[in-house]
Amino acid sequence: MKKTILTGLRPTGNLHLGHLFGAGQNYVKLQNDYEFFLEIADVQALTDNFNDPEKVRKNVYEITTDLLAIGIDPNKVNIFIQSQISEIAELTIFFSNLVTISRLYRNPTVKSEMAQKKELFGNDGESITYGFLGYPVSQAADITIFSGELVPVGDDQLPLLEQCREIVRKFNNIYGNTLIEPQPVLSETTRIKGLDGNDKMGKSLGNAIFLVDDEETITKKVMGAVTDPSKIKKDDPANPDICMVYYYHNLVTPKEELETVCSECKKGTRGCVNCKKQLIKNLNEFLKPIKERRKQYEENPEIVKDILEKGTNIAKKRATENMNKIKEAMKIDY
Image (cartoon, rainbow, N blue to C red; front, side):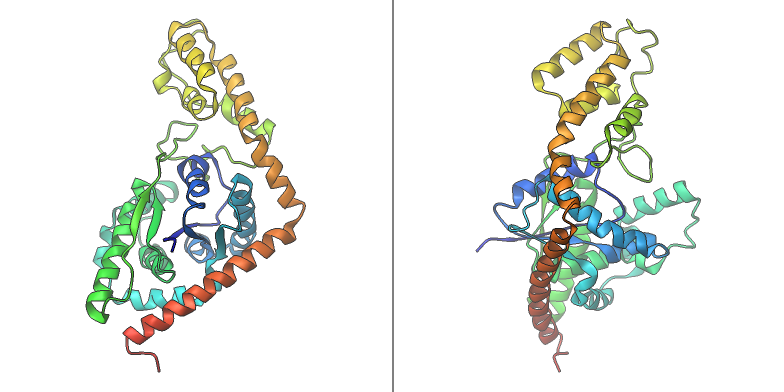
């Protein structure tokens, strides 16, 4: 039997290049060899967007369309909506008894996201919600309710997975060997930097190129990308290793062309404007097949809804079977 993979994405906006290179391409590879459950985590999206539910609902369909456009095969991957699997919420409550508040505050990923919120919104921590702080508990329920054996993650998400593993060990110690302790599958590509040089590309940071961006939008964004600040004049030599334009050339430009870009940049025979124009051309070529596939689904939204319904039904069946075993272990199978 194939091992089970569980992963998820929060529907807070369309996918961008960071999602594609950091996770999406890995999903496309893994879908051929595993039983794959891909969660559209709308409940978790509400931890940040509880006051804008329409945005989350819209993005459930947007992000699913993006996933299909990058090559996720609905015949190989069960794409499902988190809120439609009530067993996840139920298991989250059970797990909440196994984790202390202090442990949640010590989670490095939670600490990092809290610091980012404070930086962006001036949040002093007083308005951090229970839902936000309990995100790792909910994620542990996501994984274990489907008997997830493997979880594709970036290294920045490892603390969340380790917390899940702790919860599983504690549950099994109390109630017997019931749950599977998941293992990480690290992506070959780590976090993708933003156009501004930030270590993370993100919608809220305003430094992302989205898969749905049209050519005019991509042109505007790339022309504003950060380059080597020491290059003042067109013919000045520059260091491509600290230039975000060259960074993105590395992602989408053919190898033989890339070597020329690097060489000319170092010699000072390449101007930044021409280099950006070349990147724009290559980005548009790279995204063209994705956009073509996406257009087919946009013109047939009922297909996307049917895919979500089918995937959610399969996920519901698996979750129900596992919840019966969990309740039996906990002696609450009345």
